Image 1 (cartoon, rainbow, N blue to C red):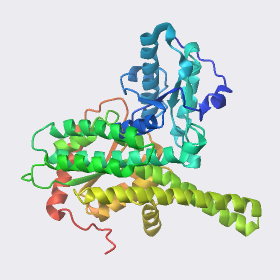
Image 2 (cartoon, rainbow, N blue to C red):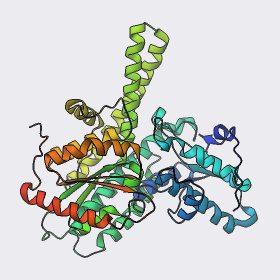
Image 3 (tube, helix red, strand yellow):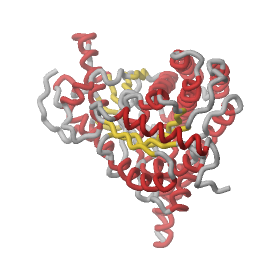
Length: 456
């Protein structure tokens, strides 16, 4: 593919946004492997031809068409779409029709560079004459990732509910992986088991998701958990618990973070990563907060029109949040009756933690809200160490580091910053090894017990 950079600013609005996905191939970049596969299966259950793209195979292309000022996820996802389209063109030849593809790249408001990925990737695709007709499908945090406009109106809410539930189940499968693998009877058993389980759950969501038959999906998940428990060697003693926070893409994308969870496990850790559902809940909660603030402001000014609009938003976003938290709680409660999996954080509780400790504020926004409060919650729960995983130069995670590093030093809880780009840092493993030595010492002193932020 040859590129000629010509910017058509009209294309940034006409070819980026919500598009009807019927009769299109919906291309989803990998982030959390299990999560994107279950989401894609859910979309297929609604008649959308969703496909998960291979990841990092086109990283050289991603680096070629970015400047280096973008953060690492931009390079990876840019490379993923260019590589896929290149191979698809080679496979189909003259039958290749770029208008048949919609590339999924959501966005967010605020200062994070992520909000501009799809705009920049639009410019790149437009610079290839043969790829101008590839659309970029974008959902935004500004409306809590509403799915309106991509499918028939009467199916929008059902698709949203099923897609959210698939993310919750994917989080549980990830936590099952991290719970079992440090204690597996034979190396490799857990990875094989989880790979098989992912495909089983894909079939379940493709079959039952559109009808919201979530009980049948949970029945299948129960079978998986009961099988997974047989892999655990009860003779292996408990290990230090390490919590991971950070930027959502890099901390969940195994290749991007150079499989840091497996490296930590190699040095004796049991690891729990912040969930993807937590981010979805946060965006809904934040829209609810904004609507509530807007309503109060309009009330003070006695502006009845804006008051009505904000009240509608309050009811809508609060309803979405209550539904999401209910579904999440039901799924975790049922699975925790079978195995001791960590529950997810409630976003309102994280908001209260920041207010209580005066560490940060949800008014500022960004993932730092979740990371800072999540670290405090890990400390309360007696974790033996915390790792902050993020793209090199990531602003929200740099804020997190600046706030929590002195706090962790004061509490004598091991803390590690783990920024990533495409380079392999020679001192990375030594830093992890040193961190894990400190975590083992913390474990010997404290075990897994009530942490220093306990409210009890």
